[in-house]
Image (cartoon, rainbow, N blue to C red; front, side, top):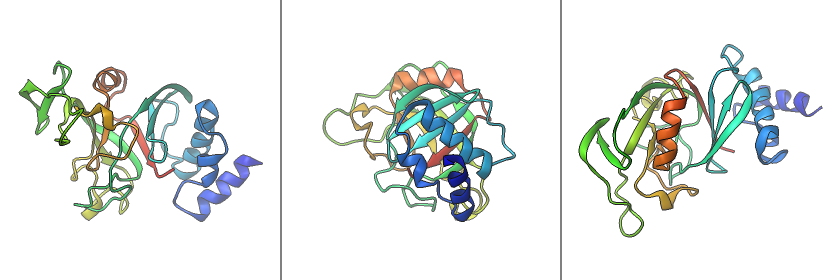
Length: 206
């Protein structure tokens, strides 16, 4: 019955149904609901390979492989909330894929500028001004939904939306980025080696 209600809600709205946000708060049950949503909303995409699901409400990213939850990560999305417009400093929602990976062999806390190692390490921003450094690794996201996060003024790739490490690990768990998805440095280094280019990433305001 829950699946029927879920699919009905999907066809009535582009936002993820509230049942995913409230019915089962964590774990494999949440992933099962997500996969039902993915099957109805994005039927042409393979859901058995690696999948990253970013929950803006939970400030959590879930790594799914072969339809099973394999890991969760505490993350930080945008201070200004969800949104796809250029220069909004918001985190875009909808379906994406990892279009490229940057940071091979960069040391932990190594600062990346223009996706290249700048040659020095960040001091952890545990006090003072958050410098919004991009550290350790980058997974560059490309939107897959025309007019939502692909093309024109809503293009996630052109906006340089990344999943990346941050010097300010204290910020994780609260909306605090300028649009990207922040992770702990050891987490992004581990994830970088686990997921290939082409991995689907679904970001939802739930």
